[in-house]
Image (cartoon, rainbow over all chains, first blue to last red; front, side):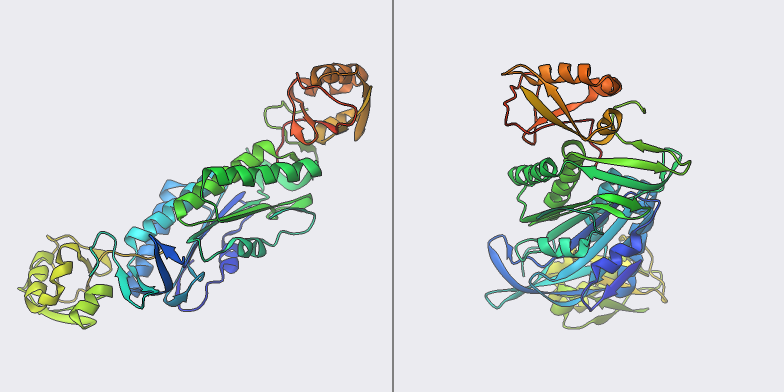
Length: 140
Length: 140
Length: 81
Length: 81
């Protein structure tokens, strides 16, 4: 299950969607809006995406993950729009027969999402400035 | 937060208890009752524990985890008694500033729980037999 | 041929538009698209070495040929999660 | 001194009791407790090499001395999670 949404993420529903009698392990990752980054204070984040490609890339990640680990069920949901401190920006859930597989697959999934899926966040710093986050690119 | 319970585990409440504006990452692990193990079919599991020591050991794990990773909040809940297929036996949630820390700490926590905390499960096999699971000990 | 290029995040902000149209030769490549974008929109210069191009929702290297019906997008490094 | 030993899981099932009482010398160690348990309860023999002893909710090696007020438990390898 893959979803881009402007609404708060219901991670319990996401987690329920991957539970299975064939799996002994479920790993859920939540990314949440953190206040402090490198000594600077965030008050909010804005997320945008390239919708068709973001969905295609997330599906590609789920497919590729299954070639690497014996994944039973998996789901990703990413929120878009304006997020306040503590809000959940992304939830990814994976079920596998055994826990080592679930931890490895879950970590790979979120690592790859962060480099492949065309979603961008804009920092709203406490000094009133805003800044798109583009890893590797010097600040504007 | 540490809890031993005979009731179904509310993992959403557990997860909420570790969320924090200071953390960008939450990892939740769920152990669930899997049907097939090494070609044998499980119909149910019974869990028992040595309560005072199980709680002490779980607290020790949380304390030790904090010496290894910058954990913001953490919680473990383990269910006892009779569990059916798919039921959640254990839930462990950890929040950290960054995701690598949260994945490493969460995995360590459940790995160590499985070797240190005095909780035992009894298999109820589909052939009607039952068997305590004691890793390293030949079957009775 | 005229190609509409979707822009996102800081690329869109610098260009001041969600979609820019550039003219490239028939059978033009991603490299020729990049060149045309630089000419049409000098404001993108600070991002130029960092921009990704996607053709039909797949990352595309400089040698990929662009067809008139392709959906083309251009954006800086992603930061979801 | 008489020591009550809590038993769990297969150890309890084999012994047929949740708590067995054994007699060990004053200043006796975990090793002497293990010996006394073997004598009192031969049914535990198949588990003997695998049993853990805990004193006051901490794993205790064979050289640890047991005091009369200690809470003592004995159990096979754990399998929670």
